[in-house]
Each structure stands twice: as C-alpha cells, then as structure tokens.
Image (cartoon, rainbow, N blue to C red; front, side, top):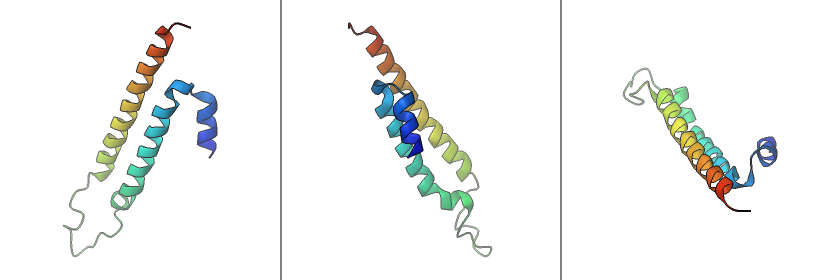
Length: 86
C-alpha cells in the first residue's frame, strides 16, 4: 500500500504502468521462487529433489531482466512524451 502511494507521487503518469508491471512481476517471481531459494523441502537422503544450488542467482538475474525491461520502457515513454508538442 505504501509503495503504491509513493509510486503515485514519485513517478510520472507516463511511466507508472511500466513500474507497476515490473513490481507485480517481481512479486510473482519472488513468491514462486521463495520456497526453492530457501531450500524448503530439501531432504538429506534425496539430494536430487532440488538439484541446483543457483536458484538465488537465477532469481536475481530474472528480477534484473524484468526491472531492466521496465526501465527501458519508462525511458522510451519519457523521451516520447518530452518530444510531443504541447
């Protein structure tokens, strides 16, 4: 709730949708990956249950890609709106 209030006041209207989309996708990625990153369900007698130890790194990469995409969209929208006649 507080994040949406701050976003409404801080971000220009033209980039708000891109930022909101990135926040929603980021939260969904974290919600899906939190059990795997935390290692919940890992069994000592079955190491192949969660075979990779790089889930945290992969989550960070996925979040970086989402946020970089939102940043590119925001910059393009800001540039387009600054060139538009008023």
